[in-house]
Length: 506
Image (cartoon, rainbow, N blue to C red):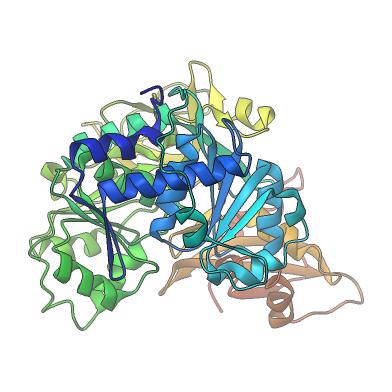
């Protein structure tokens, strides 16, 4: 087989374990043989639409087997898969499609309103709906069924770009982090070692697949081992309990809000969780008290740390250390290195806060069409600069202190204040604005905007939130808006966000 990338995985798995169940979604199951056939047909249809090696294919929608099929079919052709956040507004999606230069967009019915509002769809060669609603739209199932089932094998190297994953940028525009096939393969190796993924794994894919964690930390490692991925279209506590019990789920990834919601449920005490071997979390530090809640049920709760740019695993706390080192993000994954450094890039002492640097075959080659951002992201020696502050203890375990610069995480979603601030600045009443993350009982964190109004202008908090709704995803819109006469600044004129964070909530 000439394809040494991810696109070759369905064919290889179908050859080894054709009758094993690969995916469960709703009431439908697909074996590895069926996945291979569907991926081959879909790749043929993409090829008929003009997709060739290096071209970009985008997917917009909640979790669905079509997400995985589109990704694998794209990679069969040596093309680049661009998963998009279905929670974003039309202007945000429009920018990403244009920046990536996507040729084909496959989207779910929930996103029809956004897609139909895109002014630049004429730049796409093909638009396919999972459920066609408008006249002339391609219907995914019928379109796929007409594909040629003849196997396709084009040369794909592991250093070729496999994914473009858009991360909100600190300048207000998202950056397209590229991940190669090699990045994905090495990250998979790291997960197989850290979790000891088994061939009989039944993995609950409950977090959004457009995020690097759900895709690379659960679905791909499960697929390569021939396990079964039970895919949830969206997060729901009762559905989660139901699926664990019905399918005998052994492994699950989630963020803090998801695990907290499960533990708060009235079903928690009586839920049958006997099949679960490993629970895994990342994206933000998990409160030790929440970890203990799961450990008291006899469950193994592991944490990790990473970024989109590291595929994402950089550190992992294995099961054997999950109780003794609860609250730690673990040690470097097997095939990667980390350092915690001072501003002069010398190594910090144990317990001394510093920036986390990551080096390894799982680290991004850079950002799509952005050489300046790529150059700024690396220190000498190929060390990726995370921007995250952490400490290392005497045994080499990592503890995260702060997040990427001013970023905060709301309900598992990264929010970069600069993007929100840029949108608020478009309102005619806003003269100055600063957005910070503040604690929230439901979402972990939410936004608080501090606004200085223009002379003679006025606005209310609700008016500003209404202004943002067509421009930004709902989770990015600040819950709190505080009007001020001035914002605290340094001598150089920079807003002192630390002082804003210290202010109490209203």
